[in-house]
Length: 200
Image 1 (cartoon, one colour):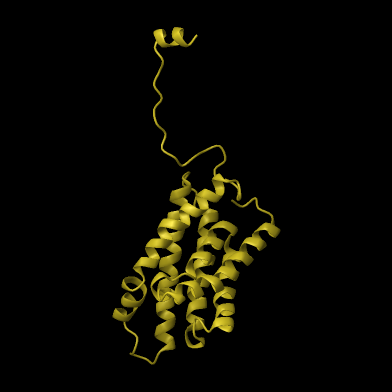
Image 2 (tube, rainbow, N blue to C red):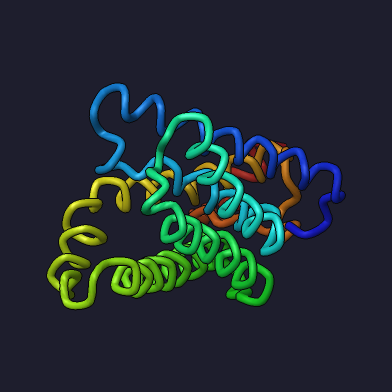
């Protein structure tokens, strides 16, 4: 996954940053932006595909540009959003570089899970400092980052690995393990002597 040229990585990163602007508008238009967290998806994709530096850039630039152009996220919460998404892109990229289990899906899910956990914990800490002392609690963090956003988290864990593996199989990005496939292998039936003669 790391044989891509810097030009191709830059193009993918630019597309992901643009999606950070487009996707929230689409989801907020139907009133589901806060639940599905659409801005998280392109940032995680960028980190997992292009690596840590590009993921970090996407996580910082995406919400900043969206805030300037659309007012989402609001200026008051922009620093926390940049912290969370920046860590998403950074951590996912670092882990995809060093975690190599031999299975593409295992690598993706490990990297995705750790990145999401670290990003959301950091966002909770950031909000605790942002709000007046004592007004932000653990219950508010659980409600805001776990209970309230579980549909978006489910979408991330279902679609992000699937998208990346599909891009690999389509040869749009390099295979992580060339010559290997993360697909179930079914046992092949051995031909009997009679079948062999019949085929012959």
